Length: 282
Image (cartoon, rainbow, N blue to C red; front, side, top):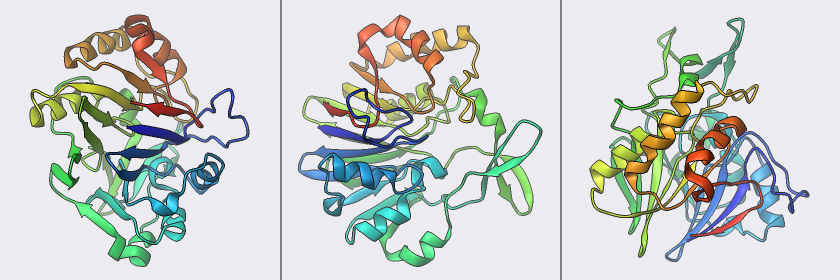
């Protein structure tokens, strides 16, 4: 599998001409398929793709991990640039999502619901917990809730029938790409907890080796970058990841620099940052 990081919060040192922003967008090539996982906040991923030699017009499938602007905000730009790709997202997407800032102010962080009106025929909504979008490619929901769950979720709410309720992140999805030498699991923010998501994957695929895990772990405040978890909880999370037998971990976006350092103290070079402009061969 080849992955090109079109958008992440930071830019790789040798790719300073590219734009970065708080978000994720990944271009994937696997078993003859060309995919896009998330689209960042706006058109920046398109600009970077052109500079990186990626033809997004050839993308066949798009997976939107969850209903937040930093993962699906560029969806309209993609649909205008690409005339063929099918977009896969949860049937619970396009709800009114908000983040509660310090002082109680609510900031809208959802997607533009007008996209459905404009491009209904290209949006495939997934209601089930497990969906095969093509041979060797699977979209999974989280079904486990007993393990670590990020504290940052407490500030994230949905407006439902005029009232605000805690977001349960049932709109969150992960992508599993089955490669001949092991699966690659890709997440957006892992709002329901990365170990819960891995346990959900393991329930579905109990015996398959995990070649790589790539995604954000939502351990930092998206507005300040400050780590939201106690150090002992992040160290415990690093230990808990070990039982899943992941051979390589790539993280960034909402994990945060401080949490990354704590996780790397356990995982060493097995844990790497991914950054805008990087190309990974897995």
